[in-house]
Image (cartoon, rainbow, N blue to C red; front, top):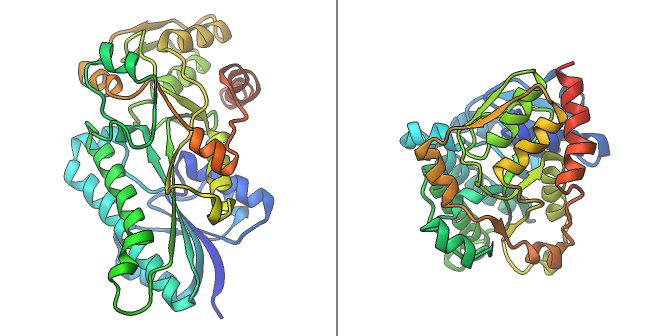
Length: 338
């Protein structure tokens, strides 16, 4: 008899590690994890098996299906924004083809089980593309899910397309199927910039904020490639994991949409630098904008409207900017680099 598991792809990444710890400590599910990289040793206690391999390896995925009954999929694996700009063709394969393969696997498994399979997907603020910063950001202070979906990066294009693929597999494919209906319960959280004290930033366009903090904690000065007045929404990593779990546990009947914005705080780059330098007085932050990366940041909203998530499934961040710094970031990051 196959063991029933929750599959987490991209398990060794920032969100993956936070999610594994949250689910593992609750003991609510058996975890099967998947990543190109090994799983950190401290997380192995929470998983029944970690598979180190390529998400595009259909033979490997097929073998896993014969060994495990996959009940829920958290599909976190992705090629991030900076790397995607250098290799857009590879990014499309990883981010789009990988997601499509897993959606197909979920639909096939749902028909075999004759019950729905949940598919949780983290999207990104990168799906937005706003023109002319001075005009659009002042007119559209809090952007809703369906506004300005005109991404400027390959990563943003990939994420937006995958959102639509998930909606298609959940709502429309069954209308065209000649046999059994597809039963994929696709749910998507559209994240702002994420800040973790546990994992090191890995190339996201919003990583100027966590990079600044990690550099300061190591006694290093930081040359910030974003402009001082850059303002985008952020969230502490524990809130990111909690948002995904909260959406997963929400009653299906309560959900009015498949894709939800979530956010917490929206500091300016200079405001964030002031907090960092106050905590680490020997660190000096200077600003030298990188024009290409700054143009991407300028196309993102200063804040997003997450009222649908708050109404439908009770979303509320635990950390505002001050609490994130004092209660989560500073204690953990000081301990990390002590």
